[in-house]
Amino acid sequence: MSTAIPLTLSFDGRFARELEELAVPWQAEEAPDPQLLILNEPLASELGLDPSSLRTPEGTLLLIGNRVPEGATPVAQAYAGHQFGGYSPLLGDGRALLLGEVTDIHGQLRDIHLKGSGRTPFARAGDGLAVVGPMLREYLVSEAMHAMGIPTTRSLAVVATGRPVRRETMLPGAVLTRVASSHLRVGSFQFARVNGDTDLLRRLADHAIRRHYPDAALADKPYLAFFDAVIAAQASLVAQWMLVGFVHGVMNTDNMTISGETIDYGPCAFMDVFDPGSVYSSIDEGGRYAYANQPPIAEWNLTRLAEALLPLLHDDQDQAVALAVESLGAFRAQYSGAWSAGMKSKLGLRADTHDDVASPLVDGLLGLLQEGKVDYASFFRSLGSAARGTPENARAMFADPEAFDAWAARWKALAPNADLMDRVNPVYIPRNHLVEEALEAAIAGDLDPFNRLLAVLADPYTQRHGLERYAGPAPEDFGNYRTFCGT
Ligand code: AMP
Ligand code: MG
Image 1 (cartoon, rainbow, N blue to C red):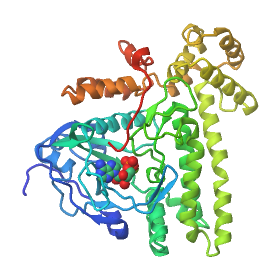
Image 2 (cartoon, rainbow, N blue to C red):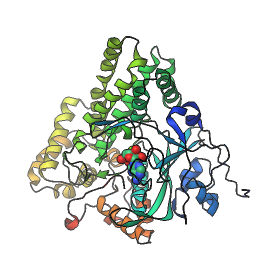
Image 3 (spheres, rainbow, N blue to C red):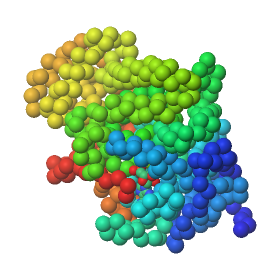
Image 4 (cartoon, protein in one colour):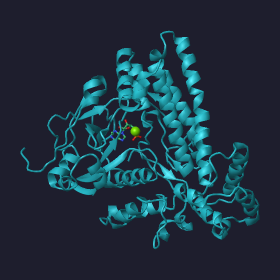
């Protein structure tokens, strides 16, 4: 088809070319009536794409893989994974396709990926589809995470397909166009390992090193250095989740990236009242992926990565295990270091504040927050005002304000820096009641509340007049929040 539109998207196809055992060439299902619901114009520009071209009917086809640029090879990616602790040797993209990689304006390779693009050979019993609500939800939450400075996959667009999708009821179908520094997962390595093909495993690791950790190639033991880099990236990522009160909800090994970006926004939610046991996912009955379990689960997942990498670490299996165990030993210290540094910033304390001083202060505060069922995000933000000499709002969040006063006296003695606090304690997070309200309107055809919420979340640290309703906790009658994945 000829076109006058400069949709000069040139795909690299590197994953498909270098790792063909992990890539099944496949086509997206044709959408009967594609309608662009939302386009991320700044992200499009960053990718070197012209937003106005993407808004044309032909651009919309490109965003859902119904027009494939010359040279692109859309593929479904194979991977394995532990889901809720149980191993599946073959998962793979059941409803997704990698269109290919593009080089962004900073020279970085970025995956363009479709979610909800139809059944693939990995679909098993699934219909291969996705629906408007959850895809808009992923768009909103991933972009909010990005605005908070937390590594994440991005969302380029959501296109309604015009195809009804059967769930509990019939729902409007959609495709999310997702952007990531790659879609390599712990589960990709598990897949390569289980197939017993060390050559494939090595090529996968080399591919990952080139894309994400080029310095590892220069190390004495490149594959060990690569593993160490993944550990460091995940320790840092999970600490950032914990600091902001994010509960991923489905930390299966196929949902943990090698890059250290947050991926797969299914049943995730932001904690409102501080509670280490917070679980939102309707399928996480045992609370495996509860808020406080996220660091040990990340470590568990990295242990699964270590098992997959063993043949690359050393020819002798015992020595390989010893190396892996030593590397894994760094996770806890790295996580704790990132968490305490982040908590010091949240409390406005100097980075060189001794842990003997900061840790009891943090533990004491979290105990008070939990006991008092205090809203986590609002509290930390209002603590900035307390640092400026107006503690009333923070104080009023406690049923027992005197316990807070005693804590605050110890804290104030350290001369907290309120400006530092405001840079790390968001005013606006994707609160569950706001997200639900925006999605409900969007599904009924009114995208205004969604777009307004998106704009608020794009600048999470700057308090603005007139946006008070976006800053507070859910109304009492919102009830217990449940999220659903795989929808
Ligand atoms: P997730 O929980 O989104 O990480 O998905 C886990 C696995 O189920 C992946 O292999 C997905 O591709 C697959 N999957 C989820 N939903 C569907 C669907 N509607 N159709 C086909 N496969 C799906
Ligand atoms: Mg997944």
